[in-house]
Image (tube, rainbow, N blue to C red; front, top):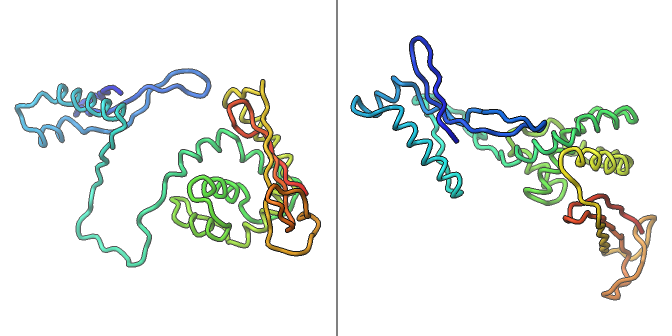
Length: 248
């Protein structure tokens, strides 16, 4: 990171900035944090301090802390004498935002647009798919628990629990298209090493006595006689999934 200085006719403002590379390969600079204006820092530090030198040292220490993976303090401004309602959520889970950026790179908006052209539904399928992915990574659980977990996200669900179950039917019907689309998008975002393909298969057991269309009695290393469903997964050389299938 580096110190960035913005000068105008009436003031000088100091920022923490960093260089980064855009997806198209070009480099650019973005602001990480505002340190303060010359006037603000002078009031805080006093007249005997070299403001520019102090800001340079501040940026140096911040850079060292980031490289050492130390916690970076975040300053919050508290407004006194402001009434707050009771039982209102004011803390939110924002860990999904990193994952959200990856999903945007996968262009799932276009994927959902193509799916919508083949189906009729009113719920926000893109939001449901995104939330299912976030929850599966951050807090894997049942669909009911997933819906409850997503209430804590900064961008809470704009759909109901029953919409998730309806969405699952569409996701199932479009499973081959979704896998193909996401693979093609992933190739654009990162290099996939398909020189070696790895296939693994596992079984899911169900505590039921009778078979149905999907759940059938099959081979089991544990010699179980209850119906099973088989799950097959293809990965590339790095272990990143390429595709999967569920079958009896």
